[in-house]
Length: 170
Image 1 (cartoon, one colour):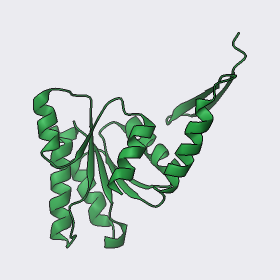
Image 2 (tube, one colour; image 1 turned 30 degrees about the vertical axis):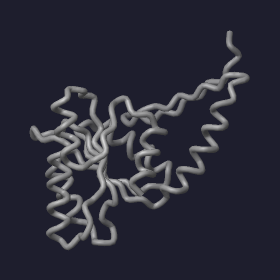
Image 3 (spheres, helix red, strand yellow; image 1 turned 180 degrees about the horizontal axis):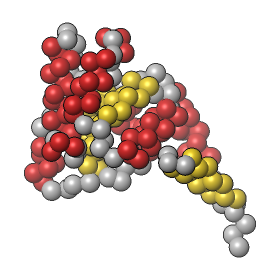
């Protein structure tokens, strides 16, 4: 009825992407041009994603990969530390992107602190920049997240907001 074009790309067990094109809607073209320009600035950025939900990790890997980022993913603090331990010094993440609530009863702030301590022990000079993503808006949760000296983003986070945050940390 709207004379719209709809496409679907789906991979069993991984997820689906739906695209909808509306006649006369111009913002998407401008947004795509800005997106392409910004994503060039993220090319090669090494990002460690820590989230206990597999679909979120897969989605983040897809999104960050489409921007040219090198993405490592972990489901808990322990696996994030294992991941970093296996990487050479020139492969270490440049940014940590952590969900606030993680497995093993940990928080994204605890994961960031543990990774920073581990990397400092290995001779990494600067504190690793980090972003915590949370749906929790309780003041004590926000204070706790900010106490780690990490950028805080609230769910749902748009791709453009995430991209902007990563560009700020680069």
